[in-house]
Amino acid sequence: MLKKVSHLKKIKKSAENFKQSLDSLKSLWYNIYIPRKGREITMKKSTRIILSAVIGTVLTAVSYYLILPPLNLQSTGFWLYLLAVICFYGVPLGVIQTKPSLRKGAPSKFRANKVFVIVAAVPVVVMVLGGIFSSEFFNATKYASVISVTEAKFSEDMPETNTVTNISLMDSQSAAILGNRTLGALSDVVSQYNLSNDYNQINYRGTPKKVANLEYVDIFRWMNNVENGIPGYVMVDPVNNNADYIKLDTPMRYVDSGYLGDDLMRKLRFSYPTKIFSSVNFEIDDEGQPFYIVSCMKPRVGLFGAMDVNEVIIFNPCDGSSEIYPVVEAPAWLDNVYDGYLACEKYDWYGTLSGGFWNSVFGQKNCKQTTEDFGYIVIGDDVWYFTGVTSVTSDESNIGFIISNARTGEYKYYPVIGAEEYSAMGAAEGKVQEKGYVASFPSLINVAGQPTYILVLKDQNGLVMLYALVNVETHNIVATGQSQQEAKEAYLELLLDRGVITPEEKPEVEAQDAEITVTDVRLATVSGETVVYVTAENGIVYKGALAEDESLILLGVGQKVMVAYEDTDHEMIRKIVSWEPATES
Image (cartoon, rainbow, N blue to C red; front, side, top):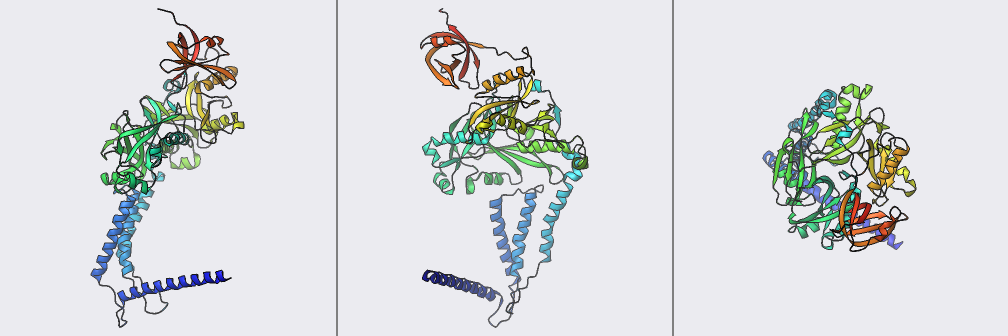
């Protein structure tokens, strides 16, 4: 009981102190307006204007430094900032004109400045009218014509290959697991830095990679390491499921996790005050040097409508230098100029608005749209986004697929009818439902002339456990395997059993030959099967099942042999087709 009384006394004391503080502020306010004799006056007009100008200037400068809006009439962000600036100057002026009432309990009088109200209405009117007249309602045809789409042949653009090395089946979550595991082995780095959550897909020397830069953990770690900068980045191989930490000769200074002048967006805004920034992606060139690729946007319809990329900035985070290019002149090594979500949105404009706005709402004749996600595929030297296309009136199946070039914005459409991606993911998960694996978003490959989804199945920790192939036209044809090659072989057998292909249509894998000197021979049991692993002097490992070729047990260290082999998913592991002792020359 004593404790309760003591607690109430503390609360009462705090309330009294708070009331005294309010009385002091009230007394200060009255002293500004009321002379000692009690006659009410107002602050001089010149003083009022100067004080409001000082307050407005300070608020404007601080807000610009923090928010970094583009100074561009075609940006809604600019007009919102302008409205805030008007309030920064106008509201203090109105507040300073407020006259407190001498009568107890009566409200203070506020004389609204008519000029302030009119000026403040200007950006509001511009945003409202600009938004209306830039909308799809008035400009459906213009939205639909932002892109052009070429219909292409699936078998020509995506020829069959024995192994898939141009598709990233790994999502950012799995890439983060590998990246953090690699970073965790570096005690001098992991204590001061984190890895970015943005793993950007790139084409590095002809193969798909995911890259993420290091970041400062917090402002205190930034203060401790501001002179050292960001020392490196992590590159993940989404095909072979490994990651490497790359240490830079010259550390990065300007990054997203930097503060004050080291903040990436602040450096970009002060260098390009009028540009409307879109996506900012971390990439590396073919020499492994880091850059930020900054897409700049411009409306294609009206004042604000159909925002699309028109320029790209290549920013060097090490020294702060940068260059800006029109999209058509962007260097070939760039990969992420157009964002995947923007690529899908632009196709949706094309697919739904080509017949007019009202058709997109009511009749929806010939209206089509992309599915909810997208994957990546490397074709030539470029990264392409891949996603299915479905009818607006039905989302159970795809009527085709599109690929969109992430650098040039080019579109290709393939009229391949079949199950949409999420149905394929569900079919793959159902194949191994007892394991509880989760499917990644698939990509599309050509297997024996059959359009086929390929995806990975992950455990609850995000680790890749199995590969799966699902037939697009008949999504109950599902095959899984611990490697792409194993899954593909099982898938081909299913196609044969179901009569989808004939034995003549089954692709024959042409074996390659190599003369090797055996440096190591090991046996291991994999899925209940004895496998022989033979290491050559160049470090490449050749493997073969003992049940298929018992003579593999005769291989010995130091022996020179001729090996007929097939490539596997891993560039350093090959499958033995046959072998024989090398002929002595």
